[in-house]
Image 1 (cartoon, rainbow, N blue to C red):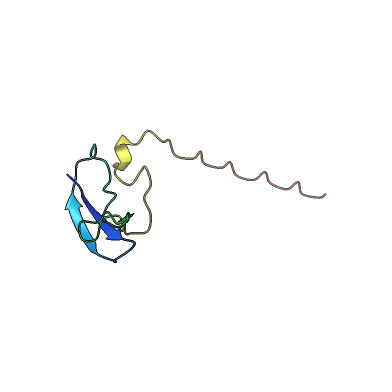
Image 2 (image 1 turned 45 degrees about the horizontal axis):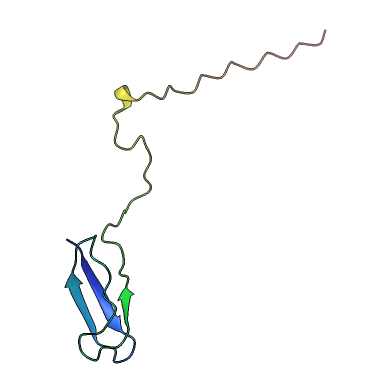
Length: 81
């Protein structure tokens, strides 16, 4: 079950509580019965690196993406007589 952080708008009392996803949000402060607001924290997952692409987790021989076709050589310029 996730942990949610709340702060009171009236007395600034802050606390965390473990609630189920189906539980409704708390609305009154346990200290002063004031109005609560839910605090949102940063996400616990951080992606670091140069980038994340669909080919990052695949090996080169199992890839379904075909390589780009080789370019044809440029036609030789006609020599003047």
